[in-house]
Length: 294
Image (cartoon, rainbow, N blue to C red; front, side, top):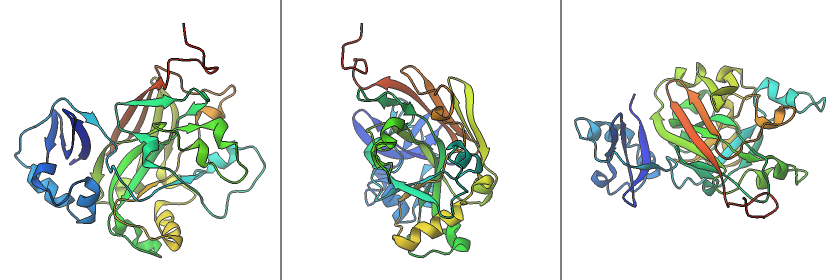
């Protein structure tokens, strides 16, 4: 399985191919494609694959960044599994249309790094999801053609500050965009077969305990429909990211809630894509009241 990642080594950002022993830097060979977003826009993933063949590992000490560092759009689909709607316990019927909200790239960090719990609120929650990266752009894309517009797959922990989601009546933006509250990665897997999505099973674990588990074929709004619906009102462009929806089992749904705390390890796994693993730490060494911790 060929994988491509964006990473930092010796204070310099590269992209390259992932090897079991480290990274094979490819960005120096493609100066006309400064980032993986540019590679995708240039339909260049196959060229990267060819260039990586036979090349030695260039970096064994590195830090993952989010794979597409500068997407024009990151759009998230909410309440997209049948049991998720029931979790709200409000008696509402399954929605007719999908719920969408934007996230900013700054709200995500890379694999192996810490999700940040802010001092203002400690209801940091996890949401394991599959993310798709758009290849060729388009407007009013037909559902039957939607998979032709996917370049690659990756994983997302769509971390959320739950209390802040409830601040507004009609949106969740402020609870979904705290700096480094979520993660995307660790890499991109080129999308070559519908089965990579249609047969995928996603699992989220916290400290080894399975919290979320489901199959993508149970989505109320399948990924083909997501692409078709979103492209109805906005033009999708190469490198755009759609975060496709999380199963039931987020921390807020337990009684009492199981929010993330410093030291927790969160893993999101899909066979054929990989494992996105992150730890949790506080933004500052203070408690929720702003007092220094002992």
